[in-house]
Image (cartoon, rainbow, N blue to C red; front, side):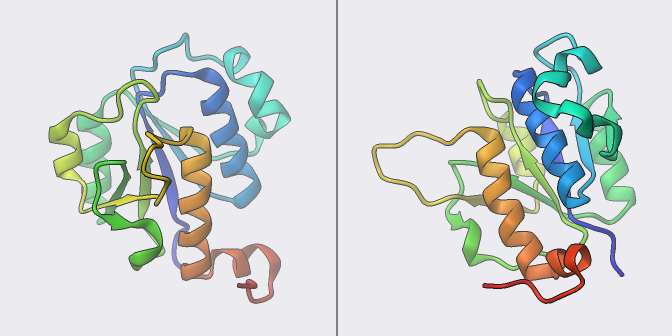
Length: 164
């Protein structure tokens, strides 16, 4: 079976969102990459409220910089899929691969243009025209759900075909 899709959090600003995404990773068997520096004092205590006891079962990989993360993922042959409001491709209008890494940017600023340019694919979630953006944990959940549906990731969890 191919390696699961993974999540990457680019310099997350908010501990509660980071903990929520680590919990999501634990529940769905999805590795979560944390790209430092974070905008909060990174510790288990900071993540405990939203990560709860799921922090013990998530595969969390820390990278001390984007450059190190990017070097690692290129060596592994993994495609980087950036979730961004600046993309033209809707998240449901693309084909995901089983070893993609879905990356969300900082809550306060997204990712710098040079990092956006390094992603092989950039997708957006369609929203009402007056809306600016969704919370990163919600965004990651929506796109991760579609990516897992397309790649059979839910079958890996349930042993039966995914519905939908």
